[in-house]
Length: 409
Image 1 (cartoon, rainbow, N blue to C red):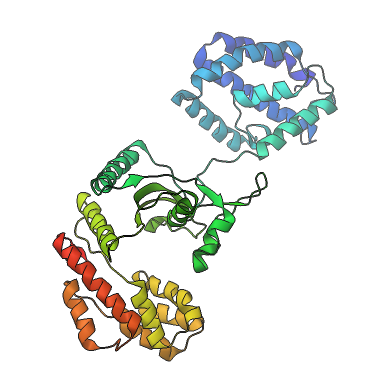
Image 2: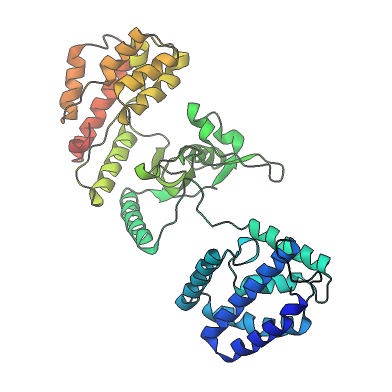
């Protein structure tokens, strides 16, 4: 897009640059980019002295296109081209020029696009529309980025992950487990209502073909659906797969919206506390097979926690709500958890009674800790609490026989 007065100068410039070789070719299309920028300013009425008529020069356009397009494939990734582009931008800023159309870096791909958009022989108004289209397209360009709460994994990171997965699968296989897989998407009705307050963290998907879907939040509810739709009987299964949570990510703390879970579950009819003991033993073997140092596995019994809430004066309709607050003790101080429980509708006195149980510091010897709980008599004759204590005693006995009790608190 040039004025007639610039035709002679540009034609001679092109002839000279074409003879100077590859490195000089870079300067050639930078000069042409600047010429395009000057043409844009003329159409916007920002420069005088160029004349009123703007026209396309077919012969120059054709020769430029043939010379430039092959060159871009050779120099795009080259350091010389990058240095030349940076230098031209710096010089353009100093001289007050834009260095391109609509802020676009003056390089051959923009010129080729401009030539393709503007038909040969078009009048000034048509050329102006072509440049406006190019500017509009350029304004939509954005720097590529990873979605919030997600990340890429480089080859070395993937190598570490695969080694860990091999160690985990080896432990699962030694315990006679079989691997399954389930879809990353489930019917929304299958997932909602299963996670209490965390249901709001489920990723909903738009209606696709008449079904409302959602990304799986964990691997447990899909396994329950798997059992309901497949007649498998007793099964010891493991599942390694990605799950998704619409949570506020904390990348520095390793809290992502997309991450892997490794599940090991035993479903069916077995002896009392036998599956529970094996699950804890599997966890201990996995943690011991990877170089993470010393570790402890915290064991809880849902009946015992429900009994604590009941003895403290919490109604059954608030059990799950208050449990979600207690679960935060690993990350938050008791004062924070206590305030949250009060906000959720229980009295400060009730919260303090709960705190008496959940803030006690366990001993290194789990069996000795269980014995002290019984001696203190805090649970009295509460039926469910005593059933839970009996279950824990049986499980600790199995773990001791398997040599894994030392890892349990």
